[in-house]
Each structure stands twice: as C-alpha cells, then as structure tokens.
Image (cartoon, rainbow, N blue to C red; front, top):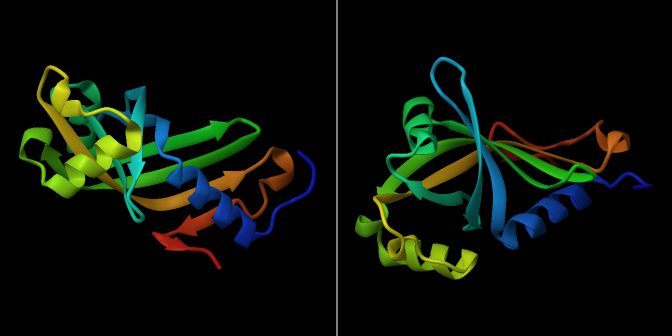
Length: 150
C-alpha cells in the first residue's frame, strides 16, 4: 500500500478494526516456551479484548499459567499486533449478564450453547502495533505500556 498513515490515523484504524469484533489469531506459550496458536472469536468492549475458550484447553492452561498472549488481526498487508495480559477469567456459566450478552452479541454465538466448561478471558492490551507493509514499520507502535501513543 502506498502512503504512510499518521499516528492518529493508525489509532483510528486500530479502534475501527477492534470494534468490528470477530475472529482473531491468538498465540499463547507454555511456561517452557512452547508456542500455541488458535483462531478465536473476540469482543472489544472499549478497553479489553474478551475471548472464550474451553477451560481445559491448552490455550486456557497457557493463559492461566503465563498471563500473556499475542493477538493478530488483519492481513499481512494491513496488520494489527497486540500484546496483552489476562486481567480476569470467568466461567461462562458464572459470568454476569453484561459480559455474557456483550460477547454473544458481538461475535454472533454464545459459548453457553456449546458443550464443555467454557471460560471468558479478559485481555488488556499492553502494546499495539499497526502497519501496512514495510513502509509503515517505522512508527508502528500505537500503544506502549498500555497507553495510546499521541
């Protein structure tokens, strides 16, 4: 893609992409560094990314153990990379109505309708990078230390 976006435009584009909700790539690691990658449905609630996964899955175990994840959305030509920390986890069956209904409305399905012990994980972004090809690698950090760049 031609033309480099301003930081303000990148911030707007990232927020627009997050607000569309839907599927993301979610990477976690075991304590010994074993990488694990899944596609996951995600809801941006305005400050956190909420995902749901089976509580006994490798992803859930990794999130519980390390407390961190890397998420990606977009394409290689227009990517958003997010490093995030787990700030809370709740069994879907025990979740409050706002969390449960917000997730289901945003992603179009309800984990309570699926078999297994599903859990919600609330992830707070610490670092967000946005770039369109190599020309935008400079200045790609739109968030650092959980603070939006200005």
